[in-house]
Image (cartoon, rainbow, N blue to C red; front, top):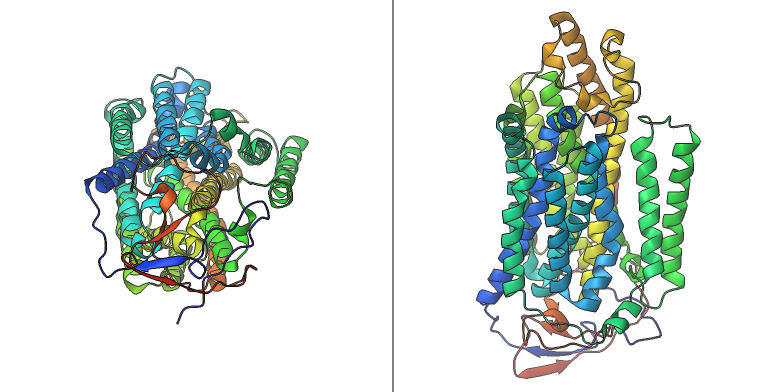
Length: 574
């Protein structure tokens, strides 16, 4: 027996969206078939989403080659951080733009930005140009991920969404598993520039599919009216706050000390800005970028918090496992990609299993428990690895982490969406992607800072003298290690293994925190509704952009009509 789904407290300026208890429901025993248009749209969004995964997963194995080629030892961390920073800063605005201008224009804009960023990265002649290209890519990649989530949420009711989310995660994970191998092969046998150039035809194909087949409804109203609906100040505040925090975390311990004003001031200002943003959104805005009712029930709030901790662990493991293989085991870029397959393959199948099992069992809490337990055990085991650990150990430990990461990757969306009305799909998925991307920024920078500080304490002094004082040695040192004498090489390998052990222990803390958030989740019935304002029926017909949203039950359509009693409008903590 499930507890009832909660409603949220509507703003006085507009009526609440219909709930399952206060709307008119039509019923039928026949489930509508999905036509070719649906499957083409789904294929387009899956392909678009895979672009970001492929690009992100290629970078770690090829990064040492990029650093050596562009002489970017002092700023290499920004290659990853610039991408996630740009994604996170732009994401809160994505949901608002998608609601005001429609789904197709925003995902087309995102694909265009991703294409332009890939051109800049592929032709970069300096580390600064590469970082600029990654920033533009991040704007596009973040929009692609958010819009993929929003479009699937528009078209598929939550009760049936498990299989579709599993397929999306499978495509994402497959791209992620190919990425390290492709990045290593291209950087070793050709040039790392092809990592970005290969995005161009794939992005163009996704662009054509989206333009040709994503024919969803378009909101009515003039351009001026649509721009007035968007909370520009709130978006500017969260973007500036996100940038401030990320800059502090990226520079701290590398370019400047953690105790310096250059680290502390932007960090404090950024955190205060984030608090101010949520206070401003809750009290001062009629149509907020992030509606506060998304966090008004504990199950959805727990889902967002879980997303944050999960993403920190996921991106740090994906980003720094190649360092283990290349620094400790002297693996080539191609070999490190092969060595990472244990993580990628288990993530792939666990993510598919998580989504399908949630759809079949109509439950999502057990999968989150299992995922976090496996993730915690696996991350703890990673901290035991040494430079001479046998293959069976690092393969098995990766598999444990991959199973946990994949299971949570898919099922964390259910506790977020189940308690909310479908009119909040776009805002919820934009906030979900924001939390995920912001956490990825934190994961890369925190793990990088820990690794850098530990290496400075553990590496032999004779080896450290090869690098300037402000250089992050974690990636810069990798091409040098095979050239060292045997005695120095062993010391460097041991130093990397011990330093990475501390990184895994830090991530273990986030695993425990994620495990605790599952306690806050409760099983809420998975609804079978979609938002009629964004479905495929009568596509291209203008819709009212007011927040009043029509609901359609995929299961309960037909001739028979029943009216159910309303429920209390006050929010319920579940």
